Amino acid sequence: MRWRGLAPLSALCGALLPAIATAAPASFWSPVPDRPAPRSLNYPETPGVLYLAMEGATLRPFCGAAQGVNAARDCTPIVPAETAFPAYAGPAERAALLSALRELFTPYDLVVADDRPPDYLPYTMAVIGGATSLVGGAAGVCGLAQVSCDGAKRNHVSLTFAESCPDKVAIIAAQESAHNWGLEHVTDPTDVMYPYAVADAPAYVDRCVEVSNQTGSPLTQCTSSHALYCPEGQGEAQNGHAELLGVFGPRTQDLEAPVIVETTPRNGDTWTTDDVFVVTATVADDSDFVGVRWSWTEGLPAELGASLTRCTNQVCDLEYPAWKPIDTPYDFVELNHPPAGSYRITLEVIDARGHWVGKEIAFTVVEGDGAPSNTGMPGDDGGDLETGPGWTTDEGVAFADDAADEDDCACQARGRGDPLWLALLLALGPRSRRRRGSSIDAI
Image (cartoon, rainbow, N blue to C red; front, side, top):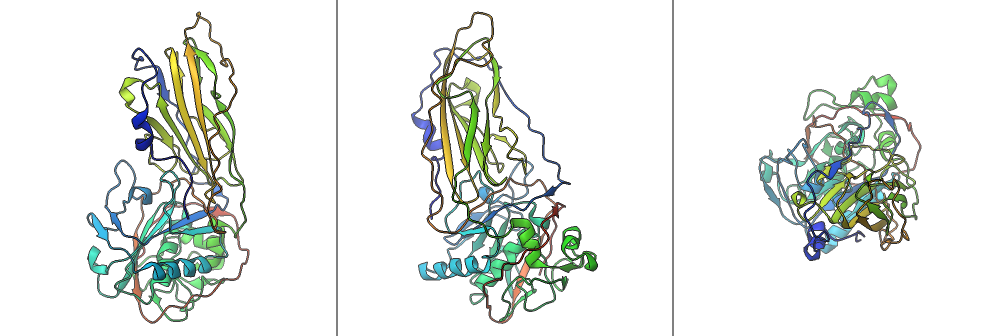
């Protein structure tokens, strides 16, 4: 599977030459603030992506800025220092693991991928390989993860120690990843979330099961979200199947790419030095779960260097807030009396299945006569880049924006017995969900 899209900006910008003959004033642009989405709202279920990092990975404990964890930046506090994890087994074993996890997650609108998504699309990363000793873990620990209640943060990282527990890799990866989406350990040995990897744990069971605190945190972390699906349990019982449906929704078919409905400016527009306008776009898709990246590569002021970017998932120069509704404009920058010259900006949008669409917007600014043109003089509005078909598989792909909760906690999985996973039955559960903080649960 291969993701569609443009090359990283560092590769794109090397051949670009400045198009403005004179240096632009440093003050002719400014970022456009975007109001964060309230974290107390009930969000609808949205698709997700689980990336299996099976070819080796190096993780560091700090992301920088306000982030505590971000799979796209290879950073998570569950490692004590920069740590290199070796590749997992060979091609046959990797293919078998990929197939097993896809089967296990069949009921949910979740893509399980072995090809890394673009960095501006949030995804959960399961690092597969290495031994517990790499992070100073105790003997018998098979995995490590943070618990993010109700799947509020979609770019977590988990560890599956394939060398420590070689016969339980699939079920350990499934359990650790589910911690990243808000599931905790339960007392039912037939549930994937049982604290010990046993031989007959076939599914996330579709009934309310008592939360287990045998390992890790002595307190239940996600009582509010558990109570939505098991109200009689008062937060101390969990229906893992229903909660995953509440996070991702049931499996859907999405064959259409997102649409860039409108941009300002349009490709080929002419504006004047008297104008003040916001570079913005509206996009449409059948899910709120899209990744968006703006790249300004020509006509920049000198202080910005070769490029300026704004995108989802906290990997660009400027950010969009977590859970930004798709029906709100994707503003980039405001240009305030820009100097005469040529400008080039690119917009990319990718959806939950990896369908990609891009648009290159080239526009010109000419000397004004003292009166703003307000809307610019229209061009042909071309500039559409190739639309990507998404995955070369029937798997879905989804990426949501990064939630802001950083009070996460770590969970360890211990091994005992042999794993067995079966296909799950598709069943609809409660679909209304509330976001709350995330926390740590150790097995």
